[in-house]
Image 1 (cartoon, rainbow, N blue to C red):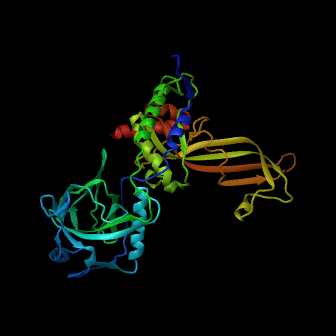
Image 2: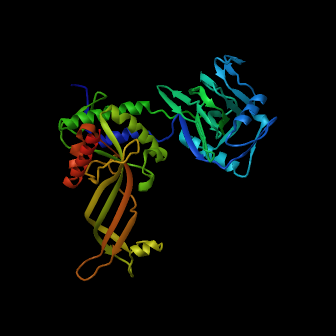
Image 3: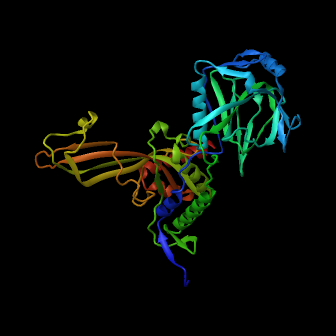
Length: 453
């Protein structure tokens, strides 16, 4: 068409352009359980509170509490059809103990990490809430109670109770958080942005006490808000869908024409896309819910976009081994063992890589379940962004000086966690690249799961 410019670019390049803007992790809520070294909690009119919370002390707390109100416009009203729970003001609650400051600091650190917030954050106690059987709070939003408040932190003390789940909503998403914590050595907590609609479902048995804190960011600037990558999700889903459709037609590159993604038939694209992560992870840490920083943000975006495009997303460990010729320019021998002693390899220089092996293993699904995929090869053109592995430092490196007719040589290894994507209906094609040693065990596992189902 006259006046339109057609420019073909690889799927790995195009994906990298979109994901370059995804650099902030976090979600609109976070929830966790951590080990608890019981604090000393004293309430005016009751005295010291034992943990787990006993029914008798819950009744004592209710006697000195008042019905919790809620905001209706400019008014603050009490209506048990809207909010049925009890409150004790922060001024009447004292929390201390040898380990409390460390415990609260850990809770705040995990909360702000989950929300994707950086910079110093302070937790200010707002109220102690007591929920007896039948207590609830319908959907509502929290108001900014102090300058700089951006989120609410709810810390559930150990107690015997059922029900009372916290439901937090943001745009078209909803999270149902279980804060029941009857284990004396643990404490459950949840944090969410203050402008999120949330509700407390009815407590069906027992009693629960929660400490509510305002999370306040120190310093100037706009209040933090949940990271939003909806536009990027739509773009990535469209890109992957076009790639998957083109791949099925023997077409593996993407072209842009008039701002729309269409297929450019040249049969040179990858079977899968491999995205190296920024942080280092051991095999034991290889899990979607343990990813850090921008890695977590990219993984979350791809986990949303890939299914929309008919693609599968995995987490895998990329292992690279290389060997080749080197040049020795020093005056004494250097080896791998010298590296262990803190010495470097300045006396050697890599001349040429002559042999190599690149494979993906330790597979995980987004639900963190392991997969029986074995080692799959990393092919040329599959890394996104292209050149992402250029210039990275090896994990281990060994140089050997020349002996006899052989010149100096080297061996080195690299290990990187990666996200891997391929079209769902081409799984067997991808796996078959590794040959029968990988394909046959996968098919056996597949048959076994079919039989079990």
